Image (cartoon, rainbow over all chains, first blue to last red; front, side, top):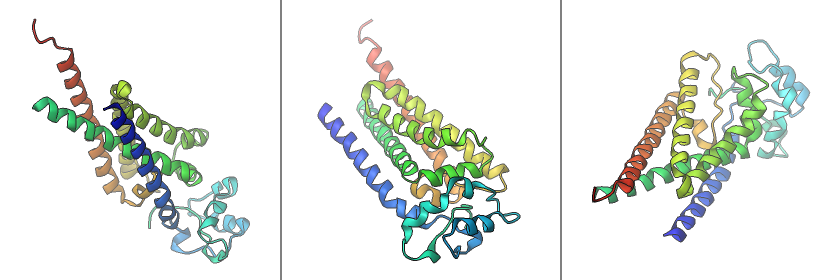
Amino acid sequence: MKRARILLGVLCVVIAGAAAAATRITTVRQIYWYQDTVVGACNPISIFEECNGPGTGCVTTVAQHGTVQLYDDIDHNDQSKCIIPLSPEP
Amino acid sequence: MTTKRNEILLEITCYLLVLLFLYTGFSKLLTQEAFEFDLLSTQINQFLTPVLAVGVPVVELLVAGLLLITRFRRIGLYSAFVLMVVFTLYVGYILAFAGHKPCSCGGVIRTMSWRAHLVFNIVFTLIAFTGMVLHKRKYIVEETPLFI
């Protein structure tokens, strides 16, 4: 019984870990884009300038935290696909 | 018969919560910067954000661990219930009052609409509550002597 519990626990960790890793890509891809458009460049400064526009709700967080770099792993080569998470609202 | 059924139900309840907390905990840690960013977009105190960004997933994993260890299951169930109530209140608050709605959730859960998220949280709060009740009943049954 004890062994079965340990096995079940390990199985839960494996399943949850694998699911989290698998859906990570989905999560990143579904991060919502700046005003529903792809930001055209990966240059953090230009993104910051765009983000910092009135009413975007982004304020200084991109510049402070370099969140832009986080999503480089979507597509390293295609800079046009560099995105930033601004709002979860599609 | 009822006791056996309750025990099975308690196991299912616990493992459902374990899967939820492990999944959301891992997801938040894997996309930690995104999670921190989302927290920053909320009205939560900015100084608290880095603490919450690490603290929330760690607490979730800890609760999952407590639920997996039979000896700590009771405290695990209570913690899970409290955690779910807090998350539900947060979602309810965001839904009711926040103009800008950032989803600081883990994994696929962040793809849900806020209403769906609220329902999801309420369901898991009820599951945790059921677990607490079942565990308490089991404890009472085990503690009650057969012959008085």
